[in-house]
Length: 194
Image (cartoon, rainbow, N blue to C red; front, side, top):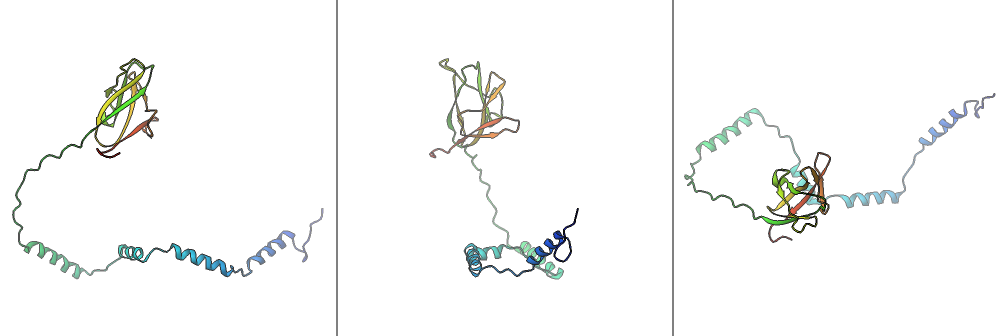
């Protein structure tokens, strides 16, 4: 077996490495139109003058204050607080209790023909499994329940036969309950909102 030798009698792999290193030393210039295009792109992404001024004003800065100046500033603030005229006495007026937000009656429906009982539970019942008993008025397996809920976002689920927790299959939104199941989400709008 014979070793192949390069043109100068060296290893061909070593010659190839030298050739590649030689190409790395070549001066490569980008075309002038590429530089102009990059600069145009940078200019279009530059924030407006107003944004730059606000950013400059909000940027934190170190302001060195000598101990003497700090002491004088503290004394001035203390003097203003202590020497200001006292304000007129404030009359205590009883404040009416805040009115509870209006509640919106919401109908919940679940088709569960094999269930003996269905209860609605959620954040509005403190997740009590016996929360709100739903009714199958016609015996068709269509369970309904009306609940007056405050406006906002509510999580809920159904409890079938006291043990099977089932999310609402018609709910548009659902969220992981943190226990390997999902809860349904209901958004109750303020009155007048649609």
